[in-house]
Image (cartoon, rainbow, N blue to C red; front, top):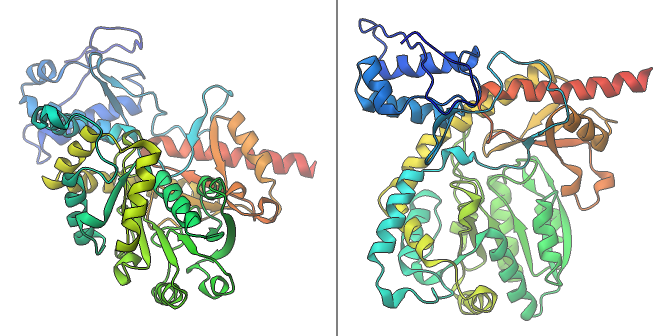
Length: 474
């Protein structure tokens, strides 16, 4: 093949030169993947270009269709291509690898918001297969209200998985399926308030939306400082609270990990005062530079409520979360769930149960971990090259980096200027109980961006910072 078109509007598949050397040690799939990636990076395949169907390209190149299917799949996972049912496989609209110039024009800003996963990595094929099987295998009599505690199949699958992977001590009977972590948190707060609780401690900083969600249940929020070793348990002991909300594996937004010593101190505090620890284990499966830390819940299942969800590991679109609760809370928690929505969607629960049981969930995580690690590394490298004045922290796990700005930086002003240059960045101050006292910083959510797109986007943020400094000094 030696003909290639750069039209981004053509509905006919483009021809593209993919040289193959059958005598080379590199496998054909790697050669095809490298050839297509290079064509995207140097602009020979422009954004929006429709690629040939896998069968057609395989015939043109004289290789098996599996070679093309795997190459397409890997390039989709890396962010170079995008596939849509009914519209084929196209070049994704991203910057080429060597484009490190700051973005210009305040059109569509790239959203560096939160620790969100890349929607392109969602295992559509496996999910579709399991959803179809769940639909086909569910008897008509079961297609009614799903029940507030959740499908027994999913509770059993998660109890086994969480016990093996996160060290959670639970059973299907003590698990409750929720519509994401936020609902789990709200239900727990309503339950505690009904039992007389008036105050709950939270990490400071913590995810601002969760703090507001707690406040909306009528409970007073008590902020407790977080440092490099996680929540300050000594400061927590000074408070009279009914529970504390923590993210021990990866505090948001700073990325702090609760130290082993403080884990023990936290559990002993809960036992001594007979209060609850609500553990938000939102992205613990994504770890890169450290050994996995088990869930705090495994130290005391009767004083720690474990909660997680599929939003970071699979997709926020699923709206599935789960709680491993102490036996004393399960009945009231199920009742709160019943009056909230009468149960989460049954078919989605059954599909997830099948995905977990047959190992698909684990395979998905093994596939995407190196992708996200590569993006994390690219983000850190770009920060060092283009924004050395900033200090990234909390990068050992998760899908975001906490970036501390030089003292005196106008955080809001920088965010506005960066957005005008095409990079929408999440400010850190909003996550503090008192935003006016927060040190300037921002949250760099890198999970949704291909490695080659990150340098240009980070350069845009750095350029905004330099421009503001220049204006202030002139």
